[in-house]
Amino acid sequence: MIISRDKYLRQLIAAKGNGMVKIVTGIRRSGKSFLLMTLFRQHLLEQGVPENHIIEISLDNRKSKHLRNPDTLLDYINGKVQADGQTHYVILDEVQLVDDFVEVLLSLMQDKRLDVYVSGSNSKFLSKDVVTEFRGRGDEIHLYPLSFSEYYAAVGGDKRDAWKDYYTYGGLPQVLLTKDEEKKINYLTDLYELTYLKDIVERNRLRNVDGLRTLIRVLASGIGTPTNPRRIANTFQSAENVRMKDSTIRDYIGYLQDSFLIEEALRYDVKGRKYIGTETKYYFADMGVRAAILNLRQQEETHIMENVIYNELRMRGYRVDVGMVETWTTNADNKTIRQPLEIDFVVNKGAERIYIQSAYRMPSKEKEKQEKRSLLSTNDNFRKIIIVDEDIKRKTDEQGIVTISLLDFLLDKNSISFTP
Image 1: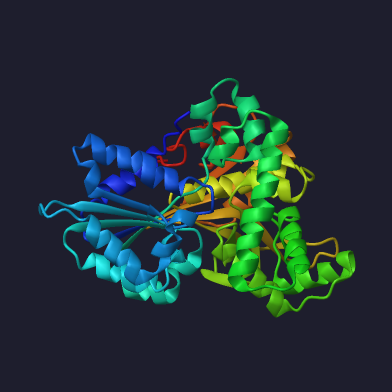
Image 2: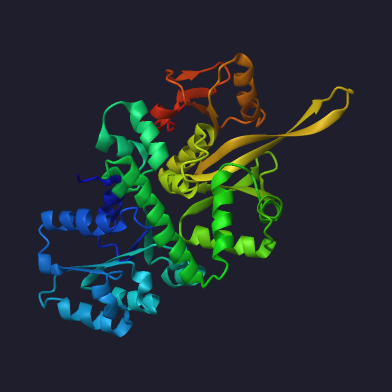
C-alpha cells in the first residue's frame, strides 16, 4: 500500500531549486525517509531527472556509518556528481548523525550544481545555532504522523470504525500497514522502548531512566491538563514516592520536545494579550504511541479528541495556544469574584485568529451554554467554533458561534476556513 503524503510532497516540489537546504523534520517513523526517498524521488524521475543525478544516503543505515565523517561524506557526494552541468539532487536522511553537519550543509550549498534535501528527527537539528547559520537559507518542512483524513483515505470503510482505530493505534504509517491488533500494539511498544526512549536516553546521556519513564507516563495520563514542573514533582512525590527536582523535570520535558514526541501549548490571556507562564498543556504527536506508553489504559475519548484536534490544527499550519478569559461573577454571599474561563484553543495563522472549544458531547442546553460562555466572554469578532463528537450538521447560532462534528472537521481541511 502506497500512502500518499501529497501536502508534504507539494511543499518539497514548490521548494525545488530555491537555493535553500530543504529540511524535513518530524518524529521517528513518521515517514520522512519514505517522503524523500520514495515519493520525492519518484517525482524527480517522472520529471525526467536521470537516476544518476539523484544522490541519496540513509545515514542511520549501518552501511553508511563511514559517511558520518564530514570529509568522507563531502568527497563521496563530489565523486557522484556528473560533469554535465545539470542539477544533482542530494537527499541525506538523518543528517544530524554527521559530525559538524552544519558545515557540511553550508559546503554543499556553495556548490551550484546541487539541490540539497535533508531530514532530522530531533529539534536540536534546528537549534538556535543552526537556525542562525541557516537564516534565509533553510526551508523547514515538518512531517507529522498521518492525519485522520490521510488515514481514512487509505483504509476507507465505516468512518466511526476508522476513527476508533485511529485514536487507539495512531497514525504512524507502519501501524496502518499492520492488520493484526496485537502486532500493532507490539510494534508501538517496541518503537517507544527501543527507539524513542533509547534515543532520548543516549542523546542526552541520562542516568535516571526510571524517572524519565515515570515522567512520560504522567504526561501521557494528563494530556490536555494544565501543569508545570512543580506540580509534576508533587505528583511524583505523592503518587510514585519519587523525588525529582523541578529543574530536572523541566530538562526532561525539553528532551521529549526535542524528539518531537510531545508539543507544548502555552496559556494565553485573551483580554490581557499576554502569555501566562504559570502552567502549560502537553500533547502527544501520536495517539498510538501514547496508548502504548499507558498499555492501552486511560483511553478517554474526551482527552484523546482534544489531543487529535490540537495535532490537526498544527498539521494545518496554525500556531495553537490555550486561551484564558477573565470574567467576574457574583457568589452566594453577593460578592463579586474573579472567575477565569478556559478556551481550549486560540488558533492563529498570520492575522487570522479562531477560538475553538473541544466539547465532545453537548447533551443539554446547559452544557451548550457552558461551552459557549468562554467564547462569548472574549468580546471580540474573531471566529468561534465548537467541535463535538456527534453526527450533526454544521450550524451557526444567532451569536455567530459555529458547531461542527469532529469527523467533518477532521475530513475537510477547509472546515474552519470560511467567511462568517
